[in-house]
Image 1 (spheres, one colour):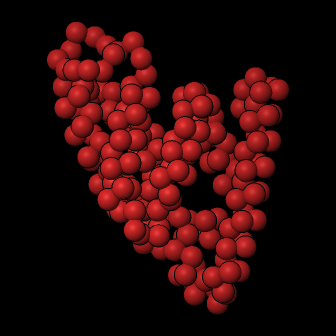
Image 2: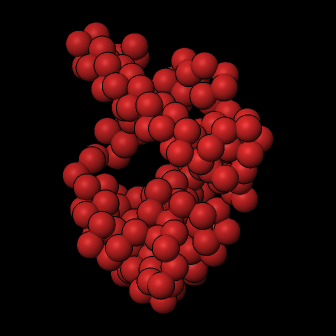
Length: 180
C-alpha cells in the first residue's frame, strides 16, 4: 500500500477483492438477498476495523475472517429456517475454505467456469435456475414438467460431473504448468 489516505487504500483493496468476498459469503448462505445484506454488513465492519488490518497479510483472508463472524451471527439469528446449514456444517465449510490459498481458490473458480461451459445447455440451465436468486428446484421442476426428486437427481449428476471436470482440469494445469 502506498502513502494514500486510509479510505483510498480501503477502497482499492475492497474493489480488488469484492467478488471473491461476495462469493465466499454466498457459498455459505446461498440466498442472494442474504448475501447482499451480509456483504454490505461485512463491508461496514471492514471499514470500521480497517485500522487493525495488517497490510503485510492477505486482505482477502482478513476480510473472510470478519465475514465469518457476520455469517455466524446471521445464521444464529436464522437457525430455525431450514434453508441454512447447521452451525457445525458451516464451521466445517469455513475451515475448509481456509485450507485453500488465494491462487488455489482462483484456479478452482477458473476451472469451474471452464467446466460450466462444457456442460450441456440443459444442464447449465438447471444449475443456473436452482442456484440463482428467486428460482429454485421447485420452479425448475415445474418448468420442465418433472418431479423435484428428478431435478435433485439431475443436480447430483451435474455436480459430480463438475467436480470430476474441475479435478481433471486442475490436474492438467499442474502437469502442464499452466492453463488446460
